[in-house]
Image (cartoon, rainbow, N blue to C red; front, side):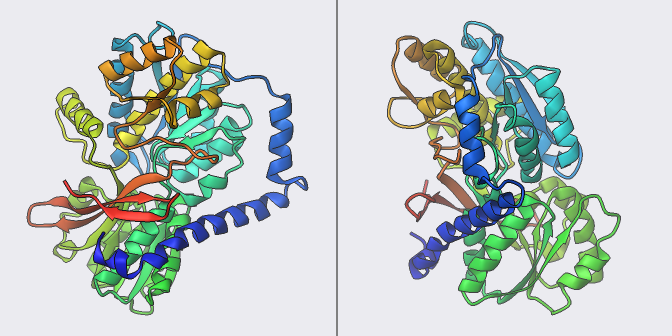
Amino acid sequence: MPQWFIRHKWLFVSLVALVAVFAFAAACGDDDDDDDGDGGEATATEETREKVQPNLPLKIGQLNSFTGDLSDFGVVHGNAAQLAVDEINAAGGVGGMPVELVTGDTQTDPTVGTTEATRLVEIEDVDFILGALSSGVTLAVTESVTGPNNVLQISGASSAPSLTVANDNDFLFRTTISDAAQGVVLAELVNELGIASVCTMFINNAYGEGLSASFTSSFGSLGGTVTAEIPHESAQTTYASELATCTADGPDALAALAYPESAGTFLREAVEGEVVANYLWVDGTKSADMFAELEWPAIFDGTNGTSPSALSLEAGSAFDARYEAEYEELVGLPFVRETYDAVYLMALAAEKSLADDMDIRDALRAIANPDGEEVSPGPEGYADAIAAIAAGNEINYEGAAGPSDFDGNGDVLVGAIETWHVDVANQELVTDKIFRVDLGTVEVSEVTE
């Protein structure tokens, strides 16, 4: 275990407290709208709704960011989803019929995302929603489209802690770990670097708010100071006012808790204005394309960040190799394995639901959680899985990103967080360490090859 976790192991318990804070805030907000609260409404819905099962041929609707603030990530996540569909179809599809992938561009905008989700559900008649990338889009889609319509949604990239307690009627799941983990690891990293004060520039949505809150709480517990938490909107032509407010008290570093398109604009202004001496990054700003567009400023050399990562797994390495062979490029971005896993989970849950006449949510937890015969992604692994289901055997999907064991909120509790730095000379983003995080047992351990 790394020394900074040995010294501050008590601090990681704050993960539980942070999730509880988000749960309480969400519950209080819901009380304003519904005197019965989330529990009463969900119970009534559960008592009256019919069993939810997929149709054949199975259609998956992917909400992706081909344009907008997360467009740097859209193509790769689209490729990962299509690769999974192609492999599943090569191994027999679902119910002996090929799976179809239908896409919708959210433009990284909750309003557009909701419109696209409505189109996918009502016009395209999809059985599942895959995505979205942005937590803000996922939350809006969950509470206005997929939750009310009992459509299962699995996101591979939406990491905001507030999604744990979304008003989703238990139809929202995610294959990435909550940012309650990343905020704590970032705080530990910053403390280890000897940075005493930070201001945060965060995208004004569930992702940015949650990550800034997690980091601020954890950094304060370590004795650090967050001088300002400044939200910003997407697609502004200038962020001069937000930058001036963020750096007014002279922090040692600016943490860019943002998305590439808007971050690229305010980072250019920050570098040109020499507003701060150091910078910090997260998964949203882990974009080589963004740094390339900024022409790899010398001030960024050696600057550090964190990001959800992937455990060192045979299934993950096999996926990376198949992806590279298919698309002639390295994966290179966060959450791609998680998106790939989400497609496999949807297909296997559909197969299980149809074979055993089960509700789709029960089927999802049945094929993802222990116990059962361990199965993996890829054509051979999928063929083995559907054969086991047909034989009436229980299976346990172990994915490319890690175990896909869902708790009662649809969250995975085990994942990986990495630390990384910017190498300006070689124009690359370099992973330094990877940590296995278990939010259930509150344990962290460094992954070694």
